[in-house]
Image (cartoon, rainbow, N blue to C red; front, side, top):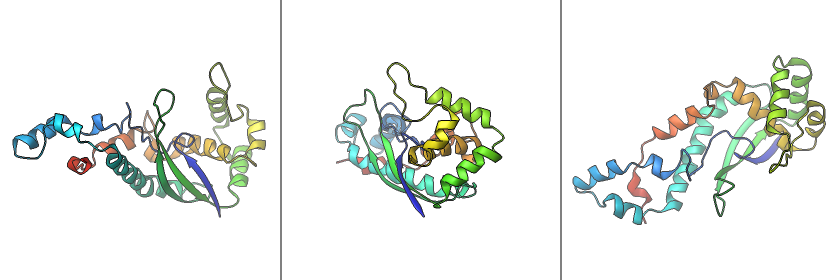
Length: 210
């Protein structure tokens, strides 16, 4: 068994961005619902609500929901792939001090079989029918340019070498493969199913008050 400690900045199985992202409280908590409850005798107007809103409590809720989605929706499909994925364990949500150049990330452990590198290498060398698409994926996403220095090789030959000593290469491959083959990512935007799922979750928004 091998444990890969990673995050959604490298392997984006969900998007937990809470600032101008789909998990933003401004998006998931609707002022009109607060207004209706206030008219019916609940505890706060929208203005009062946001003045007493606890981002930490909301962040804990997003973490819980992201963990549920990975376990209930992503993992069952991921375990059916030929790469020995065993479990996904969410650890925390990391948030940047400022959101100018980064966003919230879910930190998680990916438990896989010890021979995952051999499995990926065999697949890319002998079984992959979309190898040209993977090469194009590397070229587009991991070519260094002004303002961006890539930590992943943008060509297959070097990528296969790095695969043996850099777990980030495993994550890069898995992102490409899962997005291309799992039903839960089979949409124009691979994260649409996650976005739909989180928006349909019941929210007791008063639990986020101080």
